[in-house]
Length: 482
Image 1 (cartoon, rainbow, N blue to C red):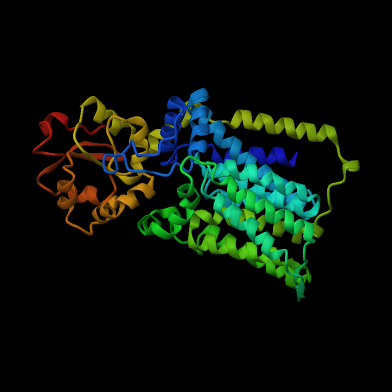
Image 2 (image 1 turned 135 degrees about the horizontal axis):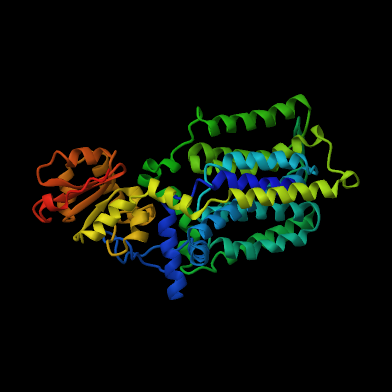
C-alpha cells in the first residue's frame, strides 16, 4: 500500500516536468541507435564539432528513451519518466525497509529520497543511473547480512550501468568503500565498526574486480570507463557555468534539507546514544561532499542518507505486523492509487503545451517556413530542441558540454554569451548568418544595437537575428506574433 502511494507521489511530481532541455538530444541519439543499429562515436549534430570523436556513455539509456517515444510519442516519454521515478522511490523504500528492519520507517526514508530527487527527476539517463545505484546498495546490504552470493549480481549490473550513465564510477567507488570499511573493528563512542568475516571480504573483493572488468563491455573501452573522471577534472568551463553543476546553495530548500538531515542523524546518535556505523559515516561524507560541490548530486546524497535516517529512527515507530494486516483495506488503497495515477496522468495536449512553454517551437517553425540558411548560432539551452526539431540546421552548441569543452567551443561561446568579448569576433569567425537566442539573454539586447544585425522574428520566448548583408530583405521576414 505504501509503495502504491509512492507511485502516486512520483506521477504527481513529474507530470509537469516533461520538457527538459537535454531530453531532445538524448532522444535524437536514441533514434540513431534505433534506426541504424549502430552506436554513434562521432558528433553528427553540430557544425562546430562535426565528426569529432565523442564518448557514447549513455547510449543504452538513450535507446530506451527513444523506444518509449517510438511506441507512445509524448505520452510514452511521460510514462518512461513516471516509471523510473516510481522505481527509484519504491526501490529506495525497499532499501530503507530492509536496512532499518522497519517497513513503516522505510517509507520515511523513501520520502527523504523523494525530497532530494526532485532536483533531478527528468527524462534523462541519470534516472536509470540512480535507480541502479539503489539496486547496488540493496545487493551490498543483502550480501552483507544474508548471503555473500548476492554480491555476484554486481558485475552484470555494472555491465549495464556503464552503458547507461556515468554514475557507474560512483557505484564502483562505493563498493570499494564498503570493502575498505569491512577491515575495521572498533568502537569510539557512538561510532562503531564491525569487521566482516574473511569469506565475505574475499567474495566482495573478487566481485569488485569482476565489476571493474565488466565496465569494459562498452563501445569505446577505456575512454568510457574514465569518462566520469574527465567530466569532473577536465571540464572547468561547463562545471563553472552550467547551473546544475554549480555548488549547492545552502540557503535554498535542498541546502537547508541537507543540513537538517545531517543534524537529525547526529542529534539522534548523541541524544539516544544510538550507534553510527563507520561505513555509514564515510558514505555520508562522500554524499555531502558531492552535493555541496555540485547541486545536481544532491540526488546522490538523498540515496545515501535515507537508509541511515531510517535505521536510526527504526525504534520510533512500531514495525509492520502481518497478523494485523487488513487485506481488503490495502486492496482499496492500491485500487485508489491506480485510479489516481490513471486520472492524473497528463494528456498529450498538456505535454505539448509544456513543450511550447519551454522550447522555441514557433521560432523553429519560422526558420523552416522562411528557409533560413547558413551557419546558425543558437542559445545553449535551445540546442537540444533544435537537434530534434530542426535536424537540417546543425547547431553551434547544445547540452553535450563535454564535446564542446574538448573542442574549445564552450569557452568561446561562454565569453561571447557573457559579453566578455567583442560580439562580432565570434560571429565573423564562424560566418554566422542568423542567431536564435532567448529573448532575455544579454546578447539579444546587444545584437539589437549592432547595425548589421536586425530582428527577423520575435515572440515571448525567442528572437531570431539575421545578418543584414547576407540575409533576405528584412522587411519581408519580420514577424512578431501576438
